[in-house]
Image 1 (cartoon, one colour):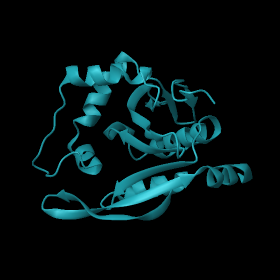
Image 2 (cartoon, one colour):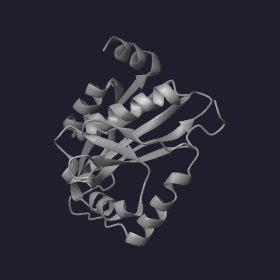
Image 3 (cartoon, one colour):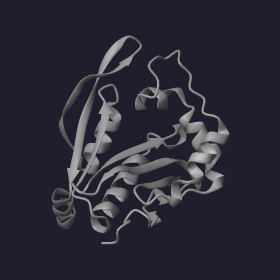
Length: 194
């Protein structure tokens, strides 16, 4: 395996979505997603429903413009095949080469939610990761107040391992983070049979 296996940025096509490298035309759609108050709550980016995070367009442009150059992570845009519009992103990051692990995260704006796009995007990325990258384990955390995301992760093959108690303080209430992972042998066995 090459020293920088994450350097290749594939295009992955499913029935509902296409995962592909970032393009400048994606920026307005990504800005809409990251500025959405519900995204801020579900990702733990804010601690209060009164807290509004608006990310400056120039900072977002600077961040996304460098995603395709990264050799230690994989950031792909989620494009809704029905509209041809970018609705969010899927990311493999925090790569630990020695332990063959990384973190998974997904962000879908309001126009990409509730139609199975996230589940398919997750499955596509996991399939690519376990078939083409030197990964044994992919992990994530999801807050307890996001059962919809937890169900989508479970459908994609993630298993609950435990929880980080009171990991987030939101609107004065403590919220647990559910720790989940999927292992290469589990993924390969599940997809060899189906």
